[in-house]
Every structure is written in structure tokens, then in C-alpha cells.
Length: 352
Image (cartoon, rainbow, N blue to C red; front, side, top):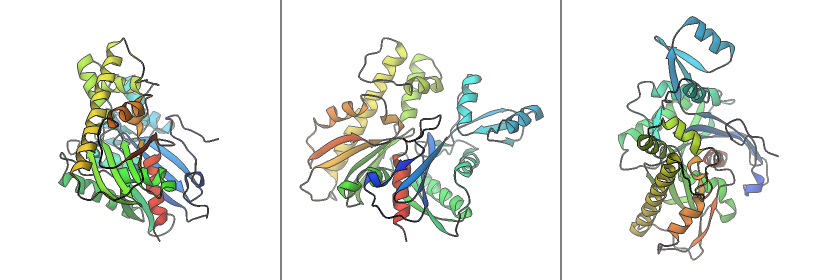
């Protein structure tokens, strides 16, 4: 039986059951650097263990007493002038206590250029999850989003910042497209052929892969944060509270009478519509689609895809479109929260 931590992240996974292979391999690390969470998967071809931290922080006034209390309770933090920066999963609890908003070092899948503390906070979170390389130049694979209309030079800066940090920890870093990572984690039995969709906090990433080679990748700058902030704005509630309600067994198949529930339904529908529209537009415009007669499976992953009914709504909309290929089964990842990290681990293990 797999263990889960307080944030619902699976802490062990049987890779052999996913079709990776049966021979033991060198232990390596895969890293999902998401807007909402940073997730690691470390292991070999048979088994991996996962860990996660919320990719967020909150600033509280500095006092010596507060600093000592945080240290005594093992709460990750550092001092920044007259403030204490509490980062990682503990930050959300602090935000709830003080009715404040968590701040994010990342926005829409990349480092937030508007956040002064973005790089320092993200590196602090990574430091709590990724130890120094146990052997010199050990390969570590990390996720990067596909380019979107809203990103350009910022995406290059984001990727290179992560590479430099990981090199400083003694690793040889390998960037892996986030949608492709879902394919690598979930479609081994299909020879890594199909469509992987990662619906995260900042954006949704999509990759169409044939035999592990991505022929099409794209992203839309809508994710869980879009839902939280949009709902919060129209109902007059903090986005942090909306997020807590959304993640508490929310069911898109069930009608809601309260205003927050109704608003969550509305903005989830808008996100799914945008995702299906962009998938249809991208594949019909593409000149690089693989020529295959077999149906292409679609795997949905990421925390934003987890409410009950998400897969059903996505499939209902997609099946109405005439795609240039036959769509196979549409399914959820075996563990949506760790799929991207596990996929990057597959990529890391494949490197010699």
C-alpha cells in the first residue's frame, strides 16, 4: 500500500507496474517544478519515492521570538530584512491563520518577473527537496512548460535559472517538456505514444508524442490559479479560501447552490473549453502530426484535473470535435499529482 503525506502526494510508486521495465537501474531524480507545487520522484526502474512542497511563501514581521519559534518547530524560513519568509507547505497554514494570500515565486508556469523574492524562494524550496548530488554530475531531469503567447524571453530565463541552480548542486540537468513527462509516466505500455496533458496551477501543458518523440507541444496560460483568482474576484473571497474549497473533494458532476460552488463550476467550464479549443486548433493546424492508424490515448494529470467530473467534461467536449486522428481512451493518470515528476524520472533514467 502506498503512503501519502499530509498534502495528498503519493510517497511511493511501483514503476514496474507502469511498464517501465523490470531490470533494476541507477537511482536518479525527476523534478516537477510546478507553479503550485514542486514534486520530486527518486528511484530506479522498479520503484520510486515522491516528495513535495507547496511552491509558495508568506512574509511575517521579524522578531527574535518569532524566528526562534519557527526554528524550534522546524518550519522552513529565512530572514529578509525586517521580515521572515516562511516558504513551502507551511506557508499555506500561515496564510489561513492570518487571513492572508500566499505569494508565489512562479506565475503561469515560470518564475514570476513581478516577484522580487521569486528566485531566492524557489531555490530555497528546491534545496529542501533536492540534496546535493550523491555522485558527481548525476543526471537530474526537470519539467519545463511549453511556450505560450504570454511567455518568451521569460521562459528561457526560467529554464536557465533552474539549470544553473541544479549544476551548482552537482547535477547534470535535463529539461523535459511537462506534457511529454505525463506521456513518459503513463504510456509505457503504448510505446510512449499518445497525448499527455498536465493541468497545473499556472497553466495547462499538452504534448502529442509518437514513440516518445514530441511532435506537438503547447500550453495555455490558464490553470488552478486562474480559477482561484477569478472565483475570488467575483465572490469577494481570498483566492486561498477558494483553493481550499476547490481541493476539498469538489465534484463537477454535482450542482452547487452556494455562490462559490457555482463560480467554481463556471470557471472550470471556461478552462476546459479553452483547453479543448486549443487542442483542436493546434492539431488541425499542425504539419507534423505522426501518421498512425491506431487510436491515440489521452492522459490527464495535474492537481487541477483532479475534481470528480473533470475527465467526463473534457471527454464530452472533445468527442464533439472532428480530430485528424482517432482518439483512443481518455483517462486520468494513475497518480495525477506525481505524474510529471515520475515522467521526468523516466527521462533521467534513460540517460547514460
